[in-house]
Length: 232
Image (cartoon, rainbow, N blue to C red):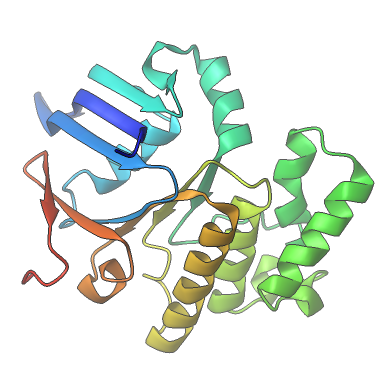
């Protein structure tokens, strides 16, 4: 039996909506094993991004617990969660979230610098992953000088450069054309497998979801496992 690597139990989370409290996640239980890729499907506003923020420790739940590699993020201080996220979580955003004043190389290197990796090793690792993602000739370009596909490749490199335990991808191809999206998705899966990272992929696309090992859906604050051939 595989050991649970990400384990969530009794997770509840709400936010204020005007004068009322809106519960977006309700008594949610969820687990993933090491090296697994899971696609999370759900309609807009269903709480998919909220769940990623809770797993990464960006937010804390109203109640319930989030464990990653045996570490209880729910019991950590904000400082401890920040350090854990910096060292062990890779986050890929739909709209890239690159630092506009840094070039591609600097955007990718930034997380290594935060983790205290020396300049020589940083240079080697950044050069290697940029070649892997076929953007090594874009190292000195700024985000505004890159296409959407190139920006997402930089974002993926930034998320994977520190070889995280967990990769959280929030609609990573949602802002790209179909061809660019498919190429980038294939490369993401390849690199995640090579690093033996655990991937949670949020998407609204069934075709994208089918590339994962398993599909779950989030609806009315509840997660359900689905077969890859279900209708959506």
